[in-house]
Image (cartoon, rainbow, N blue to C red; front, side, top):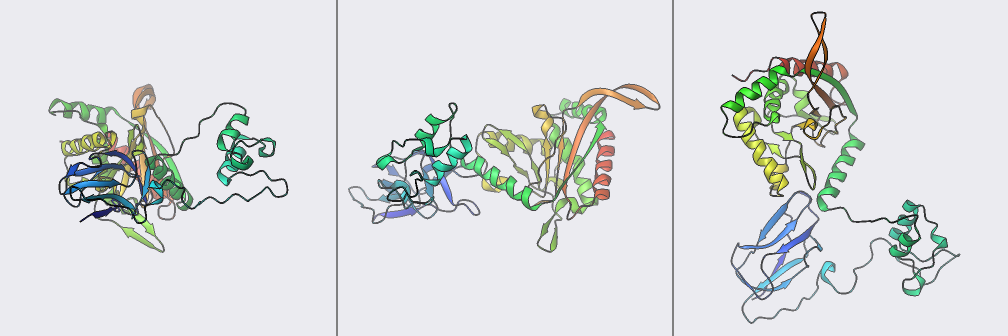
Length: 376
């Protein structure tokens, strides 16, 4: 008997996926729980297993297409069985789905050219007078290509990937709802860098500087719990566990994998976890659990050449600290000018929960911890 496999919600609040690659073709055998299709969510690339064994009779969308949660992803049945869809999802129909951006009038009214709202927006963004364009679409409709050709120069308009769209939505929500304050500081980095060199001598692999920075931050989060908390309506959610997000640059955009139970890990264990998560992030192999639940975030913008910045607080947390590239600078010590290696620090926090005095206190203690770094 044919089994309709509806696209499940593979992450909290997921609404759609992009089909990356079918791993089993129509007419081919698939085993129970065997990988059937690879999909891209807003957080990762995930292999979906077949819920039954049998022959793939139908695929709900082609590679590169978008499919909504709850629509028919695949149909698996028996050899020789046929299956006809009673109601195929809009993503895999030949005819167009019901429009969601508006409909075209039967004829122009008041001299307004026929064009969908998305085409009108494109014309506005490009500074093109849509009334001056002669449409080449059906019944004189103005198409996207018409607008591009009438524009001042060549452009390319491409849809955001699910990951880029998710990043944009989360950052916009954070910026809208959280009153950000960013404070800046710097620390002499020689002790920290010396400790890193010492740890590298006894390590089996790389020792990312982020591991040392996370280890230094944990005691400060214990003594200043507001930085490991979040605002929820009229309440403050005080967290007594330490799951640290480590910002990671990937070809698909900034990812925020989470080191779970960071307080219980040694510097070497933190290094192993950060390296594993970074590798998975760049290979699009992170699980939803790897990206969920950060209580505080550390960002090393120095890895990409940055110095100071104004990091945006990940939604659902109260603070983020970023570290810039450590460089030699003139410094004053004991009244004399010399050269020191200086680490820039930028700390953004939720002003509803953290006042300026507390923000500066956290920065001062973080600076002292870096300048007295020791992991013996």
